[in-house]
Length: 155
Image (cartoon, rainbow, N blue to C red; front, top):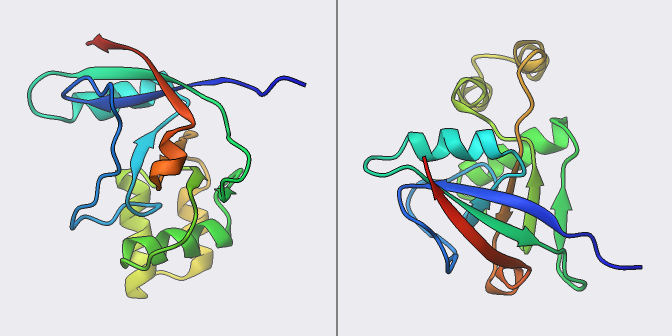
């Protein structure tokens, strides 16, 4: 049976033909890595938040055997705990992590939960009716081998 090839998108202010693992002082939902999404509109939103040009790079992704992959189908307690740990700078050993994204509004709720100003139950009530999001982060050089650059589009 042939492996499934998915189209994924990365929004930025430059075309990214050679993706790299980005390690910076800013902790993201799933830790350090190269972030993409299966939703083209979401990548466009990412690109439009950057200064300068707004560019969406497109890739084909085929999951490689032997990679350690963590996938969250939806926001769950496990997802919330994982995001909180990553945002606190706690590293993990996954090659690829995939799942919903804590957008700006949801991130505010995550911060409130981290600070203890809302309960876990209140968090779930607040995020219940948000639109679907998706992110997939390639956390290792080996994981980056599973994506192939197709093209970039200026917005």
